[in-house]
Image (tube, rainbow, N blue to C red; front, side, top):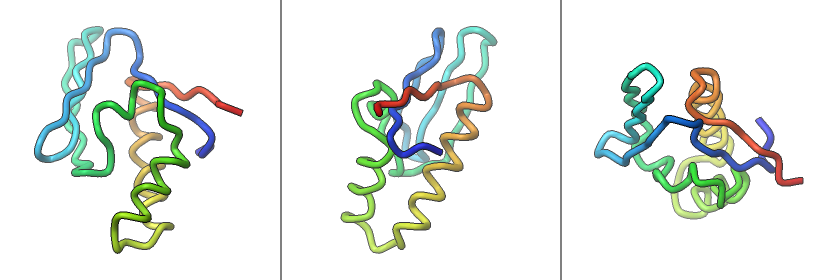
Length: 93
């Protein structure tokens, strides 16, 4: 996963923050996707204004978890969401 990417919602997809993490609604299905990401992401992360690198840096500085573990969790969730067609990445380099 490229850390110099931002992520956006695919057309027809909405996201909402919930207690467990994120809820994605895909109008193209329609389908619901429950992502138990807790506080790893906010719903606003998917508006393309924050890179993966900046997100990982912010989380590493605000938690006791090892940075490698945080980066791995971020990448796993983003790969899953992108694989389902809910989000897409854009390089900022």
